[in-house]
Image (cartoon, rainbow over all chains, first blue to last red; front, side):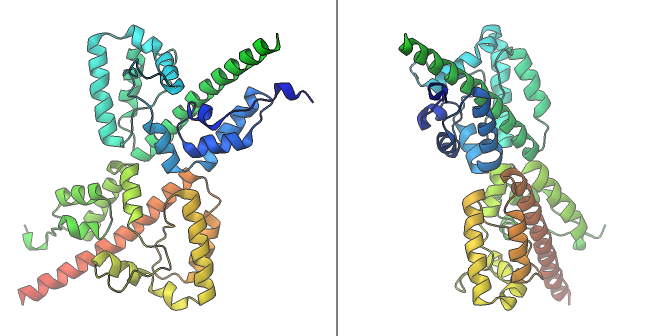
Length: 175
Length: 175
């Protein structure tokens, strides 16, 4: 058995992928993973079947408002990844589109009680704003499930980054 | 227009029907109602379309565990109604069935993060326990919606009581 390919994660690394404590604890227990694909299968099972609605809200609560880059003083992995995922949005933003996004974010949060969540990777500010306006009329429970689906997409991208970072570190260590 | 038949409710009376502050505020704004049926239509719209997931959790949080009668020192309308709705369950309970219900309640709350909610009116302890065991394997988001549906049934029964109480008071006043 090729044990060197088995991937272990620490709870704090997993918290940078998804801010639910239960998610991170259950994922750590489910380690090690032979591949990214198996880690994602485990993550989906935990997120959708084991993390309850309080855990979902906890994970949502650690995200910055979309279009609001975390402060540069914030050096956490979570903040860095969040900034990276929003790089297309931030590079395509004008001050008026950012202003409009900020206003719609506030309306959204007022209605739903949590921040507008979208897997922003590769999306422009205009696309994100259009999606926010489409989702805004949804019933709260419908939007809650959509947001959980977006959180899962973000988690998958971040697990891939974690895998890639650790694989590189490991192969460098082998040389 | 028969204004004497229009029913007005105060926010605190509505909080005894459903413990979500937003629900009570929105219902008070929607007053007066010409009939119980119209009050229920408004209540459903507010509960399912306007109260967000935090409001649902707030409403769930004020319920006692099923099978746990509120303390007799608790004289709130909410506590009295809760006790009345559980009268069949409490009269059919044995100490072992109450013990089992208490254990399953704890397991349920541990998994889902809120108390097991069921419109208990007319149901025996055995029926409630059977329903709890059926619902326990559900995914958290599925159970969250079922609980919201049960809360709505409870709210409808309590709105009917509120209507009936006020109608009696009003007709007595007319004599």
